[in-house]
Length: 342
Image 1 (tube, rainbow, N blue to C red):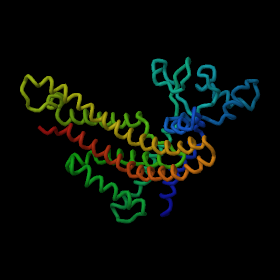
Image 2: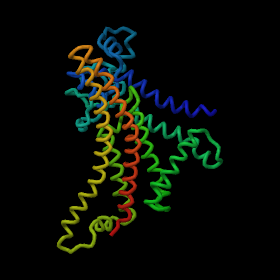
Image 3: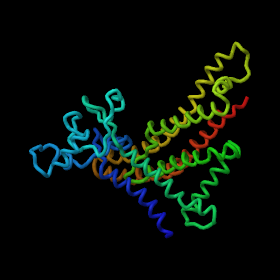
Image 4: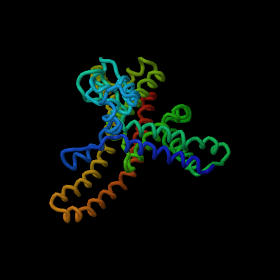
């Protein structure tokens, strides 16, 4: 039984990598650098070319093609979007007025919301939270548990005692501890899985970090207005200043209120994207030097790989650090919104 939870953890990590490798289309850029950089962009999951092309194009009424014809009727038709039947692994048709969110990239037809490789690892991060913490309550009650339960119980108590409680206090800290535990480990698992071969890093997408920052902004506004009152929350943004300066200070503080989560979004995105760009740039140098001859390419490979490994080691620490920074700043911002210091 001691191996059940580690095996579940391994399955949560291996399964999304396998699905991403199987259903992510091959990237082909104008040069080696562009091809490598394309791996950082969200990629819609697609079925194999044989499945999408060999069955969807022949509408001769053969019985063996009925399943694919039915799949085409569910919003994956090739006439409307320029894609062959069944090319996308999962696509959600959107109303026409949501055309700005179309991810198919094809003109005409209904917009599509596509399932990408980033969603795979976001779901895996959520599953990992449930798996690794499933034994923590029992361990805290009885003191008995496997290594995974002991490890993450220590992590949870560290976040409680060193991050949440010192800033928010016992009363508010108990209320918000589950939220910030989820935020920390959600970002932590996404960052760490992004370092594995064949994976993708959701936090290297500004849309993912933007959604996380919007959650923090929502907590700041919602919890602040509930704690202080809808009117007092906005009036308390400005400290005691002369009346003539109040409008200007209110504008400055209002902008600052929204700049805080914006900085969270940019910081997490830039750090995760920047580290991956450096590693891929070092790998791309091998192919660039290879254009001058195989000997030159092989000669540059050890140096480029050595620097890439060094950056990957740094990225390991950055992945943990950025989860801490995002969570810690979110705690401080939410606490400041509920209890302004004037």
